[in-house]
Image 1 (tube, helix red, strand yellow):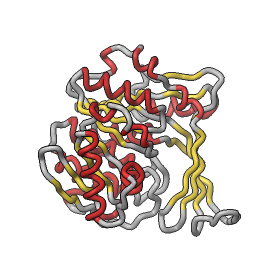
Image 2 (cartoon, rainbow, N blue to C red):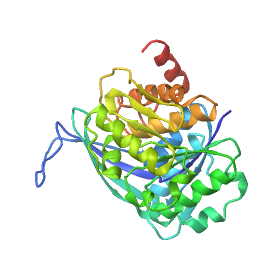
Image 3 (cartoon, rainbow, N blue to C red):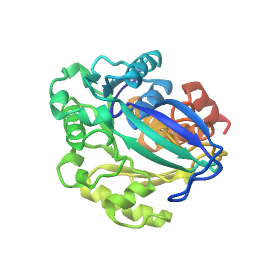
Length: 309
């Protein structure tokens, strides 16, 4: 079974579904409340597990009801929490999410325990936490220095590394952090924020991806929503991978689904473009169902969808 290690946040989501997103200062009644697990790290970890990998989750959980519930949930999903940290007297990460009928969303996050995962925590982990020839996937809902240390340890142990720069933080460009990254996977908005370049069109996204590749020396995969993704390599060219056409219900967690499935495909030894095809299918399936983790597809669903989209 392929090995994937996810370094990132574990959160609890409170989601309100509304006919549309509220305007600033506006109160909308009539929404439906959904509650459940979230956090970019946890979403990607569950996505990778369901897509067929053995998954170790490096995260920090709160010492509260949300944190304890998430421990039980993650273990039931089959995640290995052997190296997860519980932060005493600290609340778990919580996200407040609005979702409109068109699937668009607005999200606010209180990091809680996620902000207390430190570089020293990474230093304290045994080499077994970074399995050789596995894939490490990291996101930025935990401190950037912690992610940098995790990427460095993973590369030193012979792992392939993926950095999903979400939320976007230009601090990743100001250090040697990207020298430890094999694949950088921003969405269009994150690519724009990191490069200060427009990314509305495919042509603009290509130029932004080239700027990121040249800055960090890593492969760049820019997710383009319902248009699929752009795969730009250091030495394996440029490809536009289309996304299967689906009716979007909820786009929350779609990027996490993509990244989790991408990590699994790369851990299986697939090439970047083939891995991106698999990841696009997982991301497309995720938007057809509500909830950050409720829409994450299992391996057999992804393979069936690819064979008959």
